[in-house]
Length: 147
Length: 147
DNA sequence: AAAAAGTATGCAATCGATTTGCAAATTTAG
DNA sequence: CTAAATTTGCAAATCGATTGCATACTTTTT
Figure (spheres, rainbow over the protein chains, first blue to last red):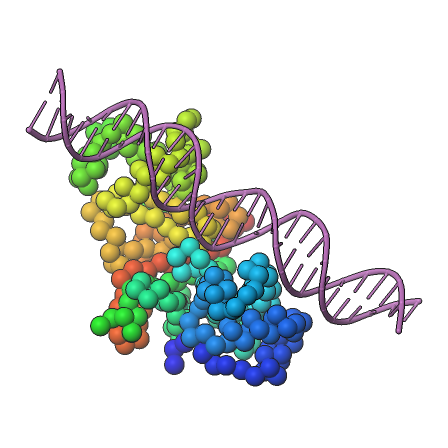
């Protein structure tokens, strides 16, 4: 319930629609990558993604993710582990500060969750500090690991 | 006012006291590094620190920072730039979630500020999620760069 | 339909931050 | 003072992110 749009496999038509809506040409490679992203329950890294394919070039995956990110198909999450994680944006997301949500990284199973329902609380910055972006990551144990 | 204890040069006695209080042996190298850290107005990276010395071994600095961090003399900040920043902890800091504050990274001058007065707002996590640590970084323009 | 132009992909290689191994130097303990 | 433990310095490995360039694929134009 509190996750990003994730773990929801889509058919080719749906995938193509998403790419078209964001003006990204639906190549075979991109459809494959988008399909894989849609199947994820949690945000994944480039290396995680690579492992889920039999044989793909990591740089191609890297560039595909970059393209997706630039076109707001996915957002990247810096969970502090040293490797960026990626997750699908919700429809119409513009990745503005208001669209941002909290992320949770489980220190045991190493998964990173998008807590979509949890928006980042506003902070009144000191005078003359101008806010453009923000990142809030909580760490600890997830529901599956807290027993 | 809202910064970490920073930009406050200390004498050797004070520096030694800090190290002793945290059970870190006050070697010459460590006193030099701690002294340099106390002079900083903002959090700095390993490379920043290296540049401020005429000639030091980066790995030694790295290990010194690690030791300081383990003993809670400094805290590390992941501001999302790819290089960790470090800043002195306040006296008695235990780096618990309650001690944590917000950090601000200026996208123009690249400095990272400890907003000590700004504690991270509490988030009620979903059931069974256990919070251990958190990180909140705001990005934008600092007071000197917002004109 | 063929040529030209633009875009995407694959592979090699680089880059920067971090981390480890090991020997030499320094400090502490007996 | 000597032995043991700790710290320091230098070389090298690791790892994620990124670039260069040649090849393959698409789209456009003639």
